[in-house]
Structure formats: C-alpha cells, structure tokens
Image (cartoon, rainbow, N blue to C red):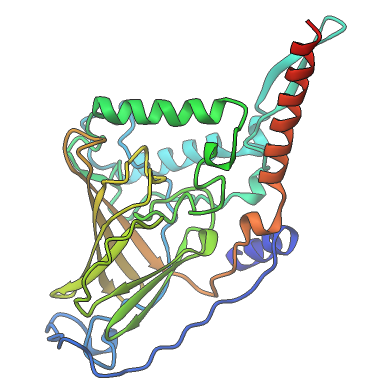
Amino acid sequence: MRLLRLSLLFAVTIGVASVTAQTTASKPSAKVKPAAKTSAALRTAWGAPNLEGIWDFRTITPMERPPELAGKATLTAEETAEYERKINEQRNADARHDTKVTGTANGTAVTEDVALAYNDFWWDRGTKVIGTRRTSLIVDPPDGRLPPMTTEGKQRMAADDAKRERVAEGPEDRSIGERCIMGFNSGPPMVPGGYNQNVQIVQHPDYVVLLNEMVHNARIIPLNGRPRANVPQWAGESTAHWEGDTLVIDTQNFRQNTSLRGSGPNMHLIERLTRVDADNLRYSFTVNDPTTWTKPWSAEVPMVKAEGLIYEYACQEGNRGMFGILSGARALDQKAAVKSSSK
C-alpha cells in the first residue's frame, strides 16, 4: 500500500527516480570492536554495527505530551486503541470539511475549503503510536514538554511569523521548508510529520550518509576525525563517531534558523542511532540551543525497516509555487502604488 500510495503521488506531482547506493569495504580509519550482544549478521564487512537500509519513522505519537495526558508517561493497551482511533478520525481531511469565511457576496458569506489543501489520500502521517506507548517523543524533560522559550527565541519566532504574514518582499520571507531547501521532517533532527517519512542510511568505513526522502536531503557525515570547516550550512556541519554500537552524530554551524520549532543557527545537536534488531532502529537526539530554550531537551523516535525504495521528491523544481507567490506580491505592490498615486 505504501509503494502504491507513493507511486501514485509522485507520478502525478513529480518525476520518480530511484536512488541506489553501493559501498566498498576499504580499510577503516579506526577499528570498531564488535560487541558480543550484536549479531554478526548486523555488522558491516569492516566490523561496524550495520545501520544500512531504509527506515520509516511515521507515528501519531506527538512530539510534546498533550495537556490532557499531563502526568501520564505511557498509555495502556486499551487507551492506545482509543487514542489511535480518535487521532486518526481527527486527522481525516476528507471527513472534516474545514472551511473559513473569506468574504461576502450579495449578503451571503463566501467560504473556502481549508482542509490543509489536500484530501486524506495524499497524507502519510502514520496511524499508530510508537511501540513503547509513550505519550510523547520528548523523553527529557520528564513531563514530555518542550522547555520554556527564551525571550530571544520568542522574538525570533515573532519576526519570522511577521515576514510570512506580510506581502513577500523576496523568497527569504518564506520558510526554508516552503522554499524546498530543507524538508519539514528531515531536519536535522528527523521528526515525524506529513509524508515521505523515510531515511536511507548508507555506510562506508570513513563516512555515513543519511538520505531523507523529503526534499532528497543527503547528509554526508565523516567518521574519520576530519576537522570541521566551520562553514555554516543549511543542515549544519556534522561529524560522527562510534560509542559502542551507537553512532553519535554531532552537528553545529547551521546557516540560519532551522525548521525545528524555532531553533536558531547556534543550535548544537547530538543524534544517536542504534540498531536494535533486524527490523528496528532507535533514533534519539538532544538539542542544546540556549538562544531558544531555557535548557536542553531530548527526544526518541523509533524507526522500523521499510520495504521498497526511496523516491525523488522534486519539490520546487517541479512546480511554480515561489514564482506565483512573488508574482502575486509584486502585482499587489503595483496595485497599491497606482492607488497611492491617484490620491
């Protein structure tokens, strides 16, 4: 069903191209001692834990614990079934028929369908909570909620919101997700959201590659101790190392505000990837951004092995969205100028 859904989606909206990757087992720059608890079948030819494959991180478990579940870290089996039923019903865009009043005509209200611009077929958010039945992806703070934002963080978010609300002066007024520079779920860090919630991991003795299906973002991360170039990048600048069977990715030097809930360019991100078994991968991350939040916070996102291929998501290359936004903005400018000159 997943392959059928994705194939139909991309055949209509974008060109489809599969991405394949092969690795070569050259001599690693640093020996990785196999751990007794890890099956030999889950190790690479050079002895590192094998994280390769395509991994699915869909879930309806929210990032933050909902207020109505305050003080409840996990759900019972019965509560889980009811929660999944309720959330999937609420998210069904076909059933909601959301509308808003946009004006009047001859005394009659004019409404507009605002069911997120898509019917439910095009979404692929997932339908289940994570296996542990936790009520939030955030594991620290223990209340499952984001720490309070700093004054600077609030001001930065308000400034970004003001840019998006005004008539666009240029593409920089739109978010990096809307501009198709970075995907809204690919991060880093990777967080569930919307669709295309898959990542392909490819390993080499000296590098690891994380290829996200959303906006085809590929992070090529050195494992060989290469020093940072200290050049700000959209996805930050990452280095990685092994701690036992866990791959630890350290990322700094972000170009600007990221897509992560208002985080800023000074964010220091630590991600951890651990192969649990043949079909499961544990992904966790810790965010330290004192310009945005009053203290660091951590989340954990289980991933499961996915069948099939990663498909290209062409995004802006396949549509005229930004052209339309800026053309409309300039038309409004011209209209305002004509009105002003006629006074």
